[in-house]
Amino acid sequence: MKLDVRLVDPLDALHAAREPARGAAAFRVGLVVPQSGPLGLTGPSALDGALLAAHEVNARGGVRGRPLELVLVDGGGAPGPVAAEVRSLLAAGALDALAGCHTSDVHRAVETVAAGRVAYVFTPPHEGGSRRPGVLCTGIDPVGQIGSAVTELTARHRLRRWALIGNDYIWPRSVHRAAARLVAASGARVVLERRVPFGGVERQVEPLLDGLREAGADAVLLSLIGRDLVLFNRALRRSGLDRRLVRLSGALEENGLLAIGGDDTGTLYAAMPSFATLAEEPRQSLGERHRALCGPWAPVLDAYAVGLYEGLHLLASLAARCALDPYGLRRAAGPLGRSVHLARAEGPGFSVLA
Image (cartoon, rainbow, N blue to C red; front, side):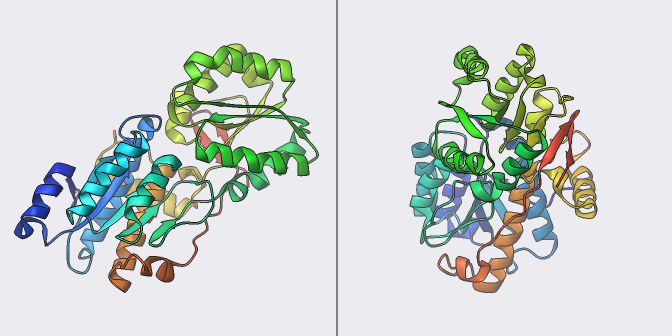
């Protein structure tokens, strides 16, 4: 079996837009996915999730009879350049819709150029707040994501002193504000907060570890992402702090867990809708279809892959119902919520706790 979907380079999409006969038949979705940068290690999985969804849409006849094609935009760069590339594609009429799985600062920049022009579905956990017309977030906000996890872990492990460590951009800032309230409501307190720039963990790891020791933290909420999250968990293991600290992450998924070599401490938790938290039947079915189409050595499916898989199906469904008018997206879809389960790392995988 072969994937029935075309992955288009942005330059090819621009050329096709200038020659209507070449590109008019396709329904083109700009796929803004990190191929580099902080979340680059999740890019291959996310791309596979999108390709699988597009294949399934095309197998059912496409979008109103038009084959769904994906225009791959590297969402791993700085917000300005990523948004500029999306703007040029939109200005040329090269895109019919957008789907994204990237950092929230990139999301806010892309939202600015996409709003009111095409439908734009953003699938990861996000920072909350309002969105512009035609923009839909299918992920979850910080309170929904970590609220029950902070409460449950504080009670389960009798935690009293939380630390908050994350990257320095819009999502971790929002997560930390929510966490401070949730920790206080659980009868504990925040004894340390640190935010580091993308790529900053490697340079600042020793001061971060010293800060945890000096603060006497017994738990740490990690809103680090991608490579920074991997490097910090590796540093915790080398220092032995991984055995003493309860760790809760809002961005730990299968690729990140594999990159740290798994975990056997019993105190590393993820509050993210990972592939492991899907119900058994859809998880098994999706995994089998992925292996059949992409081969046994394809990237592991993770939360980002599942989010984009569902987001592409959502776009196709909405296009069939309302011609994907960007102002009709919110009316047709309504507010979407995603239940998040607390999962515990066990070796190279997760077990679902609640």
